[in-house]
Image 1 (cartoon, one colour):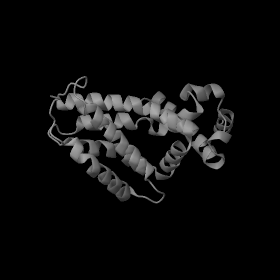
Image 2: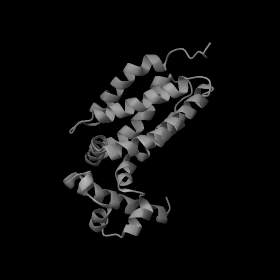
Image 3: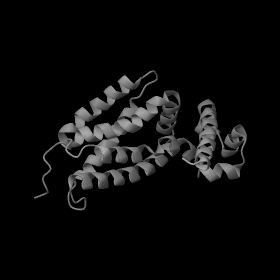
Length: 200
């Protein structure tokens, strides 16, 4: 990262931290953008340079999860069964959350408990699922316009990620989160690894 990029990331992180502290204390609906900028010591103009809305300052913490899954999947060995490759790919954003457990758990609870945040998070996931579908189709040499496998597999993968986040509890460490991830993929592995036959 360049110095300018590092500075931009630092400001974004400080804004997000100030917002999360306020939201945890007062609740999402009781906090305004003016409250956030006052706590962070910046102007509204600076805030909107980094975030489009109050929702985005929360959702951005998980916003790169989908891109991380797609990139991790692209880096997996070509011969791996889909369930193995996708499980490793999903672990990338979960492990990142586990590296910042207090903040990540707060964000997860805010998103899952606030309809406006859930809606914004689901909007982001539409793009993740589209990108993951395309990556799976390319990886398995399938035509995503005629074969339902890539879209179905992408949907199951996103559901697995969401399920791990929904079952995450305070005090869970990486071992607990890894066990949750393993359990989710054990459930969907038979479908992910079923023989890939074109529709007849």
